Image (cartoon, rainbow, N blue to C red):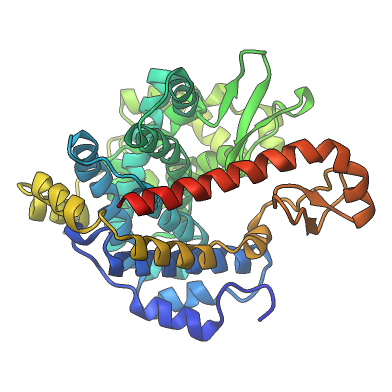
Length: 454
């Protein structure tokens, strides 16, 4: 199939092979093989959804009951990052010459949340997650609390890590910690989208109870609207918004334009406050009421013009301002509780340091041959020609700015629409091209030397 990462028969084999790993096996050969499979499934799912093709990855994950496996593996990586990774960074005798395997473990969580963001758009994916929907609700809550807390403390977490990176020469482990922090910001924003799809689709009483009663998600979403962590003002006074995975400068005429992330928060609030089941279960006490009424100042005509459904939310808030709703009736409910996080932590609670030392010796101590094979497999997974199909915007010609389809064969870093533009642009591109070629050669030489030292 032209333009595909995976054929359906390959995808089905990958989906069927998805399995749950133990914490100590994170980063192992089998774990990395599954990581490569999930990467390819993620790329194909995005490709199918963006091109409005048959979303067979979603269908296979649903039919084979693998949504819960993805949720478990995502939470497993989250636990590893919180419990094992800090210990690895503190071990004096752990000085990895090649940190790429560690980075791939850190990146694994982002890969799965990306895949879940794509498939959870559909109700049948939400239904097929079964009890794992509760674990997913708790996961999203943890990520959004972290997002709000980092914004309250730092103004913007990503900005601080960039400052730290420029202050001094960092060790490889310190660089990994900075990369993990930057990645966490993007993961939290993906969790926001997943939360919105859960509020769209779930009929689970237990999930609704956790959203409204256990976690008080409406008040957390109000805090996110107030802090707006995906928008910032630069030192030069320009407004930037986080769009399609990067900070982009916003022209003055678009400052009030709603982004996708703004929309996800407002739709989540709309779902949680206007659905009949939610209204019946939510406690509109004095604190919750005061928090929710803060939304009225944000519900301007400009905002409602962009998302007309918010007019209903505006009316509900106007009614709430002049009434005191009765507390919800206490009902006898046999409520399910999430198990994944607690089970993983309980199973490994007294083994964190032992697992870290085991992984230093057995997992992140790969031979030159193993590293080379791993690099070859990852090069096949992250094929440049296929990755360009996943870009939200098509590459632009470095000379004329038109849509481009050809890449500089030497550095692979500049795009052109025609040979004529490439020739015309060469005097300007030549120096940058040579610098990139020299940098690539140096990286390859350093990797070769590191492997020889091992």
